[in-house]
Image 1 (cartoon, rainbow, N blue to C red):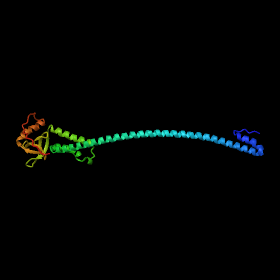
Image 2: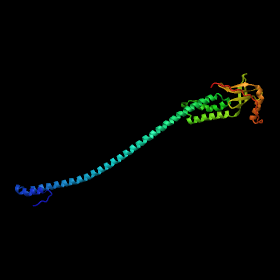
Image 3: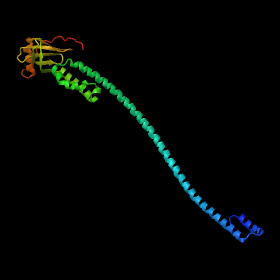
Image 4: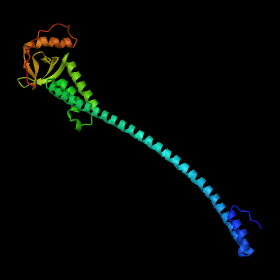
Length: 257
């Protein structure tokens, strides 16, 4: 009886050992059967191992691919972080420039506002009344008002332009004030800018001139000027032909600001 097997050593032992040991055929058959079962188990385990090895190989490939993707994402994140840091630095630099410019503008606004406050002392009462609502908008501290900085600057510039326009023109105003006799009267007042003004009442009996001072406008009575000033009023009201007026022009006096 011959048994073909990959393990030739077992065949030789069986051929040689069987007659010497005198083992029963039944025992030999059982041994062969167990050996065959063992071979089958080894074959099955080998097959399973190959399947598991392929699965592990697939898992390894998947993990390698995932690691590559993570490395790529990390690299992109680092680039984005660098870009974000650069952008943040640029924004901070721009913010500092804007803050510096804003502080400079605020200083200029404060200086301009102080200049307007000083200029208001020289303005005639009618002009002050017209400009006072606009001045009140900027009279508060910047921290105490909701007025935007740009609107605040625009208001200051408008005030300066209005004052400058009044100073460059001859204006006729109706105004009430009192003279040395403390009697309040209404006068027609001709303002030659902010330098000098001439007043006369409706009846042409009381007249004089005025000039600005740090305490406001000072009015000097000089009734002899009534007729000439009345002619000036008529010219401005288009009731008389233009001509030169013979009016005194007192020397301006310096006053402390």
